[in-house]
Every structure is written in structure tokens, then in C-alpha cells.
Image (cartoon, rainbow, N blue to C red):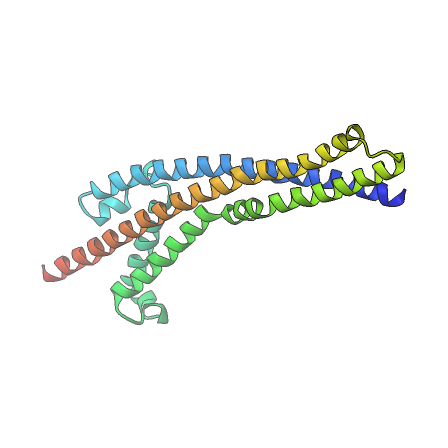
Length: 223
């Protein structure tokens, strides 16, 4: 009897675990949809304002409501770095030892990586749930069948009416595990693809910023 109680407890724990997995999955899905939509809107808005500015100074002084999102933060990182480069005291530090274009690119790439990590946060959880949920459900099914066999043995009858119900209930755990895993896997693949597009867009912006920054500086030096 103690074994019977313990098995039933494990089955219930399995189902509750799958319920938690499902709640986490759908919370992450809604959050990532909102995050990607928000950042896409901010990036388009800032990109339009940035590339329509007459020079870098005008781009740096864009209104705050237009300077939001990953691209805006990357640009702010670039503006801050250029301001330090023009400061004689700061420019004498080890931070600025090397070719300025390479150093600025390094700073912008680092900021890009930080932005990408924000966009990819939560994807590991989706992948983990997608890969483990079916096995958690299968574990619940195995324990459920063991529990059903214990009931059948206790009743002393192996008729179809006695066997079908408990085993059918046990198989539900596997079905629930698959139902939890499918949305997690689909969402992971979708958001991973969106994250790759997002990174490509940020890298394109960094390339353009570098070209503009040192293109303007070369022109000013010639004048």
C-alpha cells in the first residue's frame, strides 16, 4: 500500500509539472511576441530618424521619444565612445590604444551582443521544455501503468473493464507531455529565426554607423 500511495503521488506531481511547463511556455510566447514587436517598432522608428538626420550631431540630438530600442542604444554607445575619443584626458587611457575605427567597432559589436542576448533570453527555456516535456509525460505514463497494475492485482480481475480505464488514464500523461512540447518547439524555432533577422539588422546598422562616423571625421579633417 505505501508503494501505491507513492506512485499516485508521483503521477500527480508529473501532471502538475507539465502544467507548470505549459504556463511557462505560454508566458514566454506572449512575452517574446510583445518584445519582438516592440523592438521592431522602435528600430524602424529610430532607423528612419537616424538616416534622415543631416549629420551625426543631429542624429545624436534626436528627441527622446524617437531614441528608444536596440538600435538607439547601440547608437548611444557609439556617440559616447566618440565623445570620449575627443576628450584628451580620456583618449590617453589604454581603452583608446589602437586604431579608432577598430576600437569603435569593438564597442559597437559588444553592445550588439548585449542587445542580442536580451532578444534570445527565454529561448533556452523553450528549448528545454520542448525536449523534456514528452519524457516527463512518458515517466508519468509508466508510473500510471504501474499504479494500474497494482490496482488490477489487488482486485484479482484482469478483465477489459478493469484494465482499460486505469491504463487509459495513465496514457493521458504522455499526451499532455506532447501537447506541452509542441508549442514550445514551434515557438523556439520561430523566435530563433526572428532573433537571427534581428541580429542581421543590428549588424547592418553598426556597419552603417562606422561608415558615417569616420567618413564625417575624415571630411572634417580635410576641411
